[in-house]
Image (cartoon, rainbow, N blue to C red):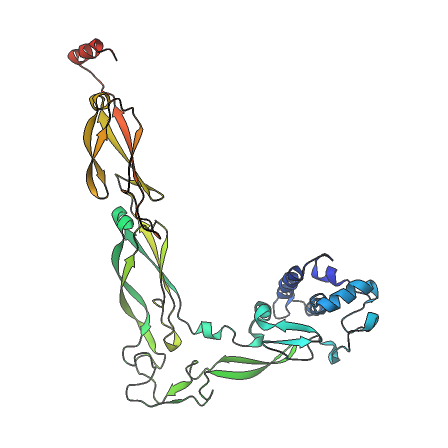
Amino acid sequence: MAKNYYETLGVSKSASADEIKKAFRKLAHEHHPDKKSGDEAKFKELNEAYQVLGNTEKRQQYDQFGQTFSGPGSNAGGGFGGRPQGGNPFGQGFGGQGGFNQGNVNFDFEDLGDIFGNFFGGGRSQQSSRGSDLETEVTLEFEEAVFGAEKDLDLNKEINCDKCHGSGAEPGSKIDTCKTCNGSGRVIRMQQTILGNFQSQATCPDCHGKGKKPEKACSKCQGLGHVRGHEKIKVIIPAGISDGQSVKLTGKGEMGENNNAGDLYIRVRVRTNKNFVRQGDDILSTVHINLKQAILGDRIKVETVDGQVELKIPEGTQSQTKFRLKGKGVTHLRVNGRGDQIIDVIVDIPKGLGRKERKLLEEIEL
């Protein structure tokens, strides 16, 4: 029976090779027989379709002969060679580097690893030995975010065992090559799956990937090399950091196997300030002046993150006039220099004038 492989994968005849691959990955993951919602028959249909459409030469022949093409094992239109015994589209087993092939179609385990999961070994086993990442928070004053700060953290986490210094061996104990993996840190095993027998690699369960095993395990960490404890860390918070940003300290997370630690992410919170508001790398502030200062002009003291500076108020300054103080803002995070401070001047109009003040104002021609 003729088959429409494009329809099987849910793509158009003009679909690119990348679109075909993505469609196959998605559907194969959905219908994988290992999943509760899996469908073995559908999974095999998808594999068959991808063997053809995933190969440029076979796809061209399939497009040329159309409905007379009846499958990857058909001899129509010049033929595609014999189908593997038992109808298993993967029956020819492993071939090439990092994958296996059937005919001219090569499957890359790294490319399809999320579909086949643990069938093909511990592709993620080395990552699994790595310690977990940690996240914590520090709170900064407004000025600390502007200029940077140094903070001390006390973390409760998995740390290197101070008795064996991470080796996992009782002090004075001999460390031998692991007999299970012969020092490689990896073991090879055969797995039977619906796709046939596959050879896979995994981290050695006896030495945890170290390749060596102590004659006597450390009594404090039971041979793991790490224990639960406190570690004090001094961290430099860079100048110019914003609220909500994070600082990453590589290797300062939980300690894992083989002294392989995760990372520490420090999320920064910045307290608000009654005098200043941050806008990008600029600082906004407000200053109030009286009517006389606005009319006649004056020199006043204004607050900045660097301390008080003098600001000249010109004659006739209107309310909400803005003045810019160059270089008095936030330190740029990744380049040299600083932003500016923008000062919004508010003119306070007096209320409840007495008779004398009212008479003086009436005599002035404004």
